[in-house]
Amino acid sequence: MAARKLAQEVDKTFKKVAEGIEEFDEIYEKIEQSNNPAQKEKLEDSLKREIKKLQRLRDQIKTWAASNDIKDKGPLIEHRRLIETRMEKFKAVEKTMKTKAFSKEGLSAAAKLDPKEKAKLEASDFLGSQIDVLEEQIEKMEADMELLQAGMKKGKKAKKDDAESIANIETIIEKHKWHQGKLELIRRSLVNGGVEADQVFDLKDSIRYYVEEGTSQEYMDDEEMYDDLNLEEEEDVFGRRYGDGGQVLKRRSKRKGEAVGRCWKFSSEQEAIVATQITPADTRNAFSSIITDHLRPYTGQ
Image 1 (cartoon, rainbow, N blue to C red):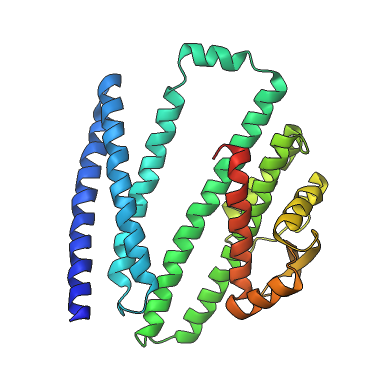
Image 2: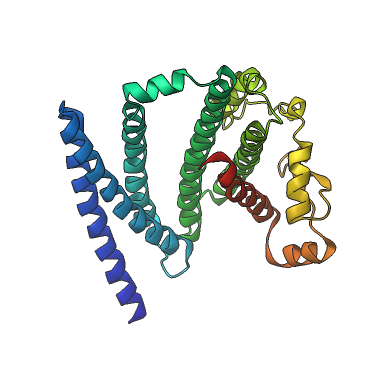
């Protein structure tokens, strides 16, 4: 009875997704075809409402995909991807909306900004855009990993290859989250004056190269690319708040065993709790979440 009720709830959600996507696509097409600024603004508001509805449905789908109540995860992952494709389209529209929101007065005010403040704003925007791209890549890889795991549970052949693929994806996700944490630290330090905009610009090519090529097997990770920024003080602050006096530990890569970054050390009592409740990968995710959540007040996100 419970299984049947759940199946009915899933079907109902899939229908809502189909209806929401149809409505979203219609509005999106009208925006693309419209040359009337007032009309485009109204349509963009409607598009925002639709994407919020779809995101709520996506959250429910992700919950089901993570549970053991549904064996066949394929349809769930497919519908999640449909929604995420629309989320990417909305981000593009939203970016255009924000750009056009700068009136002549706004642009004039921006022109009066101190050159250092303008450079700092540009550097912060760059870091934010790279963090967002990494997050999109992580979401896609997590969806790919769920598909592979679903196939293995159904008794699919070539389980060894799938297991290796999953391990590789987990390693890349871990690296992405480490880089995300570093970029968030740089943004905070930029606001506080610990890092100059020129230092960020000097790293632009290296950061962009990682974001664009970091998933490639041929990419050689530069473990020291952030060292010249002297982020230890920012890391120590987080260590004192979330850990054990800001002591720094080397994080080891699962695949190669080399040191690829730093994390914050828990107290002995905290370490015991962590050891019994979460895996090393989960620990890395927890640190990334701590960094991201705590930095929002300083970055305006």
